[in-house]
Length: 253
Ligand SMILES: [Zn+2]
Image 1: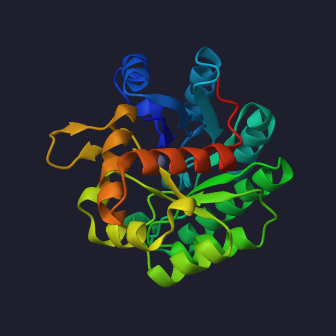
Image 2 (image 1 turned 90 degrees about the vertical axis):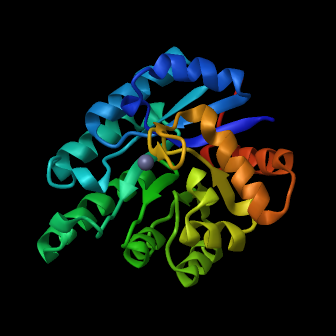
């Protein structure tokens, strides 16, 4: 199978280089390494440099960092490195954090998110969006931009918002949680394969396996999606890889 892991945090993996070797052995032909902070964006860029044509970098600031990184600093960093990336991400909103309850904190998250959406728009880059418990706002702010594309990563929000995401021409991505998460399974079932990417969001704890994920585990996502949609895993791999190549314009080698 020809697989692409469309959302990985390489900086979180203990042995990133070993994980990349195992990923190639597992049939992966591409990995999108997103950045969730300036430091992790640097690591993603460095990995993309070392593994040209296999690892592709995103630069971004995750909403969990919204109070730690200045908006101007984030914009300056993303703007000056955009030419080396395939995506601005991971960016977005997350209203599920306890510390994000005060309205001014949420406002700050939205300001950061909008500023990075503007960087993506200005550089004609797609975005990889984190939208937990903020699905409507994440979509609303994005829709006002003229972006070449977007993926709502690990989307498990309301199906009505999913419909609006799909109507807007955007993608959603599935993770290994497609094997067990009710909300995520409903999304995978509802979204057409032509709008679905697959990913691991490595490293996250794999339920029932007692270990964290790495990119090679994208095969688990493909199998879970195939079961939900009653398709062959090869078909899911082929179409989702093509979707990722289209969205991120990947120059695979
Ligand atoms: Zn992520």
